[in-house]
Amino acid sequence: MTFSIVARSDDGRTHGVAVASKFLAVGAVVPAAEAEVGALATQAYANLAYRPQGLALLRTGVAAADVVAGLVAADPGRAQRQVGVVGAEGDGATFTGGGCHDWAGGAAGPGWAAQGNILVGPEVVDAMRDAWLGAAAEPFPARLVAALGAGDRAGGDRRGRQSAALLVVTKGGGYGGGSDVLIDLRVDDHPDPVAELRRLLDIHGLLFGRSDPADLLDLDGPLAEEVAALLAATGHPPGGDGLDAALAAWAGVENLEERLVPGRIDPVVLSHLRLGAVRDQAHGAG
Figure 1 (spheres, rainbow, N blue to C red):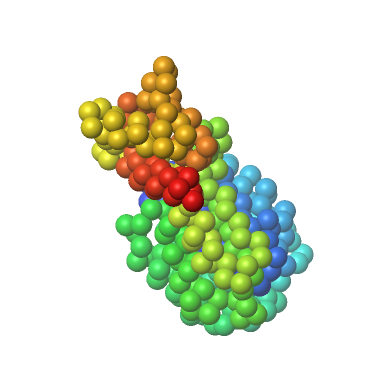
Figure 2 (cartoon, helix red, strand yellow):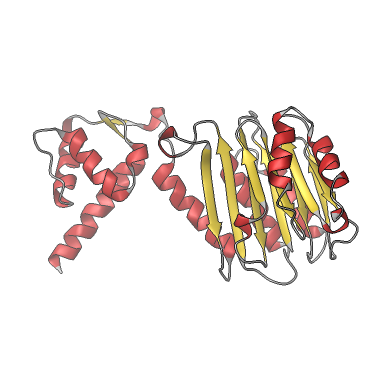
């Protein structure tokens, strides 16, 4: 009922799952991942017990292929199961039971596994594999979504489209560093869920992407003056607490606080501030 890719970043620190299906809220069922441990997808009459059991095995250092073997060996319903697993190192592994609805199958390699069932054909898995291998220069989350998109364009689930999800974990990668969940995006019911997932990932990157220190601009001179004027135009004029405090107040409203660096400004934040000032001025004029 589903096609998915589970993978590990080239540096081994980040793991994730991208999945799509003609199934309501597939992200609530299929993916599981733990930072620096591994990731898995359980699908085709999904056995949700595979998620904690598989991660527990990966946590002890069991190889992905052995995790898959252990999960399906203990499952009397294995003929109708499909699972993909990737660990902290080594090759990914995938399993498709003989009772899964056609077309069903998978492929795996170093740090990745792709699988699907009720697909238009093997070209869906082939497309995911090729897109994953061909997008090594892309950021890890975008690479996962690119692979999922390739499978979707190849035909995907032969019953149609409904939902998609992306789960990515890395140590301390969550909001404010308070969790390991870097990305948890779900499109539960949508006519074009993979495209919508890609749109949500773009928004996530804008709001929560980490600033590249090499791109940061010093908040002094003419730039500081411009930022102060822009903040004033958006209703956040700098006061006695200074420019950083006013910028933080505005960024908190816009959900851009993760991109703030004292005394400097991310070009992404600056662009958003400029657009916001123009928007607010236009609304005021109207």
